[in-house]
Length: 292
Figure (cartoon, rainbow, N blue to C red):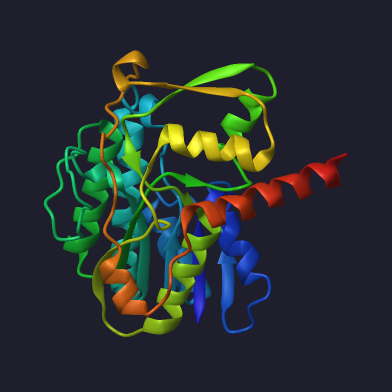
């Protein structure tokens, strides 16, 4: 199949590129904003037509949660209008769209893992624009997988793990919220699952929404303590509450996603969050050695 990856320079796109580098099954087309503007419908149409695209995995997104409160139009353009263009183009070319969404589409007030069928109720501009992107994809009539994830991190780009490690090298102690529960997701594990979904489904008609994160339920405080332990850092981690760490955008208190549906659909085991964190930190160690 001819597979288009948008947003290839981000965390998820980078991990897909790693996996695709050893793949001989498909023809991979990696693009980012400098090579394909997915907000430009004609440019997207031309790319699909020229390269006979059969699958599009959309890794492009506006993910600056707090900044989105000040840039709602830009967030909407990237998180909703661009996916709509991709969906409409996929519909025209009978292609499959694989789109990545977020736990922020829910209100975060739950006490049990969110299932795919539960109503969305975003509490931030970022969450609202991602929910709108989902709606527009479904309304387009294209074949799609929408995969919601949470707490994404990797050895590439800006993310929570890399930020905590950087702070650990410059501070004796840090404060991290202990009353927001969720599950981290290693971008490599998500990349593997997305590619598996494509391979399993092929070009068959599909209209499915899934949840995918690593296994386990923790707080940001728990996650940070584990990061320090695994990386061998001595920085002290202090637990604080959300109201002690004011942020412009609302953060969900509970954003655990139920993964039963995707596990049943793919018959795959999902790695536990700490096991994947160990692998990511080891990758970061190797990167530092190479740069030294």
